[in-house]
Length: 197
Length: 197
DNA sequence: AACTTTAAAGAACGAACGTTCTTTTGTCAA
DNA sequence: TTGACAAAAGAACGTTCGTTCTTTAAAGTT
Image (tube, rainbow over all chains, first blue to last red; front, side, top):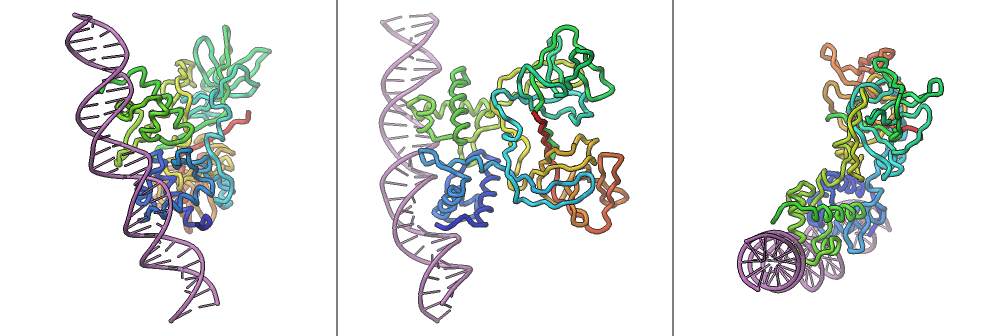
């Protein structure tokens, strides 16, 4: 066996793409096909290296399974200047698992699809998915999912003359000044948007 | 074979828990152990029902793989009216994979941090993380990461008098009309925003 | 050109696997 | 308590799997 080499990176990519589609690590025979190789024993050698490099591991029953590293994506080191074009993109930098980035407490986190345009000035569009951490308290300025009169709404939490108010980020919508009950369902901790492709 | 029954829900849960830990569907023999059953053929019958119910499917090589439904998605039934408060949130699911939502081809996907305000009217803010799928071609109207004069920029791809142009989503920024070379680095397929907590 | 190392392929084999068919157990109603 | 049907187990079998060992091909070195 030799060390992890550049070609193995290529094999890893192919395996990652296959896994993304089928959510399973296939047999050696199938891997021959996937990796473009005709030798099962060589496939095993490759997997052993990917294992040593920390991208795969084996269950107590010797089944190949992906590790956390397997799912990590590169976060480009340099950033893209959306104002004026500049900077370069390198893939050397950090790697991220998006789920980890957005979710601290899985059991307290809910995904909610946003409906409507009332938060558009905060860059929150109809159809965006809000990552909401359930809790009962929030700070001034937090964007919260609140329950007002038994109904849910996404707004910025603010205070006006000692009273809590829910402020939309769109002048066309009214500020909500709860009369009866107002309860915080959770706080917005992340936002996800998917573009059609 | 009979219909999907309440007990199958229990089997599904056990399978989901196993998968969450090992990221693979095990063999029938192992499934006997996992599901608390001593008959391979009965395990197969169960899996056939889970398949009919849409939680599993089989690859062309007859390998069992989880479907989208297999990963509980609180998304489905829970939308928040950001315009006017309404709708209810049901929290059935407890496991979701954001990465899957945004990433089709892991090896071609890069995360890039957005700098500047030129796309702000498209709801893309400074500091947002762009999910970019690397490819050399794009369609009119796509938001792309382009390389203009050796520099990177995030803009909407458009055409003007037969010429490709890069349009910002902010009137304060100029439309870019590439004179020399223009190359597409990739297409924006997703956006991630993280709120401080 | 001869040698060495690495990459890849091939062959062989027992163990494990999925499938199908048959048998037993459990449940409930007539 | 018998009959009917569903749930679960068992048995049998050809196929595929992972593993190990051997062989060939390519690349690099002396």
